[in-house]
Image (tube, rainbow, N blue to C red; front, top):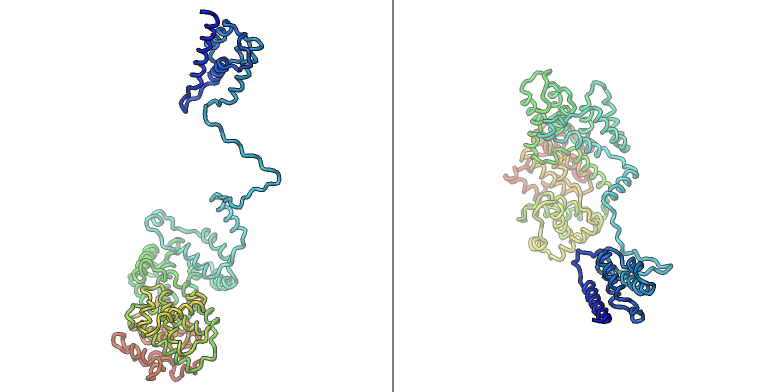
Length: 582
């Protein structure tokens, strides 16, 4: 075979080898080493020379030597081999194409990365209006904490101070953990560390009350528990006597003694029981069981017994028993603000007032006998909303009946009771157009600016009679119900303070039940003639209130309306009328 044919065959073999090496694709997870890529690129360049290059000058020995060196040293770069064994023309023909091929072939044979975005021209502004910056939660919490620390702390009222002391010191103990591990024990340092910041933040009124209660307790012989109880049992408004200390407050006193590890004797417990009513005092005497005055009493055992007695009376999850003084003081404060803001138009004459009384009496009868089990809260709230609406809008006498039923429809949705009244039911029962009733209800809501939370006579009676000792009998509750219903007919909301009217009615009912009661406060005593005059008006036939007397004269209601006024008001002659008392 001639030398030209041998060279041609060798060239064809190199072309096949280069084609196979470059066309064979490795698996995705496999990458070729750089020397192998260099060798394949070199063979591909040799087997496919450019037309302008003169590869005819290569001899067979030169090609054989180059191929032999590549096979012996597979990890040697092609540029190094040609630099030692090739001439200048070979170096220019082989090395330059090899660099061009290596520049375009990536090492892992993957898709090329996307080109970078073009640079923005000068003066261009990015639009970040749609960008959402998410701040970490811990950064937000830290910022809120720093903000609250920088803000000036608001002064605390006496009610808030009472509530925080009660929640921190006299809450119920956990029998499983706190009692067994003695975690309930308090020290004087802990008490001072908690009370000092509270007293520093007290407002002017709270400072005055604390000066009266806590300041006079600087006697060294007085216990720390007595000082705290004096703050907790301090009532800002005392309407009636006879409820100075409740069973719940006695439990708080005993619990504080137990937590502060103070001694407690049977004589001290009996001294505290004197401030209770006869019913609760008898319970305490039975628990002591003729113990000697100097005998020590297990304060934790007494506290547990008092807790069971309170739960038996008010329920296991009672709210009123724990926060009774605080809630009652809040209601009285709200009543004072409401009474000072009520301004009724003086153009309502005697005829309009009599029409209103007749409408309220009809509203009370509808609440009781309509067939829907509505609570009395709904009725008294309806009267309050109705009177507040009349104070803001001048209403013709012919439309008072419509607006009173609309007020009851609204009150049934706001007194937190079930069920509520249906507009169609009201329109059918009272022969009123349903559209007119709903329009009147909307007008009342708009006139009152959606403010439907008010304290009524029923609210105050429930709060005042809650801790009565002994508990109120069914006869006393019916009598109290009749008294405040008569007051709602003959007096309008805001004319007198609702809390004082309710206290006057409760004072009269206690006289009728033959319960020992002290003298009422001056604000309550001056309203006793108003209650007496309202009952006198009920006795006149064909006048507003006479139907109320007939309803409560039935035996199922204990005939409480037939009780003589001399029994209800022993200190009054009951000759005054409602107009004279005004």
